[in-house]
Image (cartoon, rainbow, N blue to C red; front, side, top):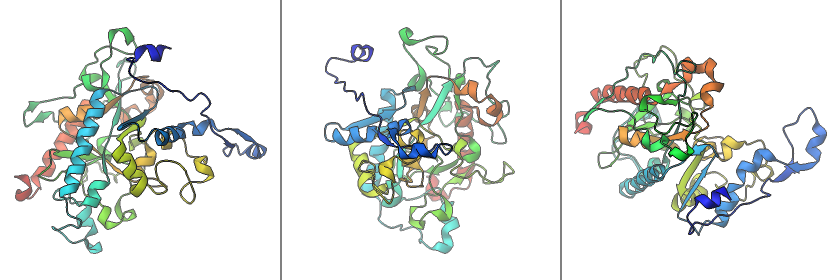
Amino acid sequence: QLVRQALPDEVGLDYWDDATPLGYRLEDEKHPEKSKVVSHITRALARQHRFVIKEKFLDYDFFVNFEDDMMVKGHHIQNHLSISNELFRLRDLAPEEPTEYSLNEKERTAIEKRFYGELTKNQLSRMMPGLVRVEVLLDEEKYPAQSSTGPIPVDLNFTDGVRQVNPEFCCFVKNETSSPALPVQPSADKLMIWETSIIALGIHLMPENSTLDWVFLQRGPSEGRQLDIEDVIGEYYSGQNKEFGVARPSSYKGKYINNQGGWMASRHEIWEWHDSICPGGFLPPFDVPHFNRDGLDLRNVEYWSGGLHLFTRQNACNLQRIVAIDPERFSKHLIYHSSNNKQRQRTAQREERFVKANTLLGQLNSVTKKALRVLPESEAL
């Protein structure tokens, strides 16, 4: 009733009150007899939205699926549409095969480091707008962010002056919904990221005919020799000059992978994922060989509704999420984890993982300036 009252009269509201699927429980190794009994598989409840999307597929132009503590705003949808439409536009203009260099296996390393220039239709089809979860730091004396930001400088001096994250896009709430644990208008310096940091990230300069400029590539997809060479999207790694003194973390490393807590897409995007990008499809039925037991195997909420199905490789779509480094656009990629509980739950990992959003933005700007110094003059125009 509260949800219905909050919605405009012209907005429909349906609910599925018995959505939990039935199946055989697989995860209880101590009680194997339970695997022979049909029961509710609550772990797979996060799968069920795919059936709703398939049923309603022709009724809507855009679909949003998020966990219940994620604050999704119109800015997020507008930003997603702006970037995805630009990616589609670039694909229409892009060549089928690269014209500036050869797809020669011997040149793979050079291609992996080619962070500028034209992109093919295939490379652009792998790209999608990404999101970065943030929380608002509520008590910095008790639960602060990291005290050392590492070897990459925090540089908030952009071409148009000193800039920082705009917290209004992700994290402002109405007075009637605010509380001490959900402040009305948090400042930019209070936004904290815990699921990635500069040590894991690389940047890419989009083609010169694009309305996009510099972006960073989020982690999760295959990299290196796990990818077909024509799928490689090159990047300038933040630790290109061995600034960190250690190897770059794997693309699959969970603490850098940026679980989004959900995903959004247009009908056009979803159909393309289902029809030509995701092995086994994105919508049901979930058949072998890419799915077992109709998808009721041990895939969890992060796979189905957190977005891992889209941007990882194991029985997944292997899409490459991009996030704009321009401060205004960067701010629209931030999405609020409104329960604000990670800052209390993961205090032992504070120094390694609690990165302020302004810190990451400034570090990405520093890496961009480093990359510009090695960018060919023809690309820098």
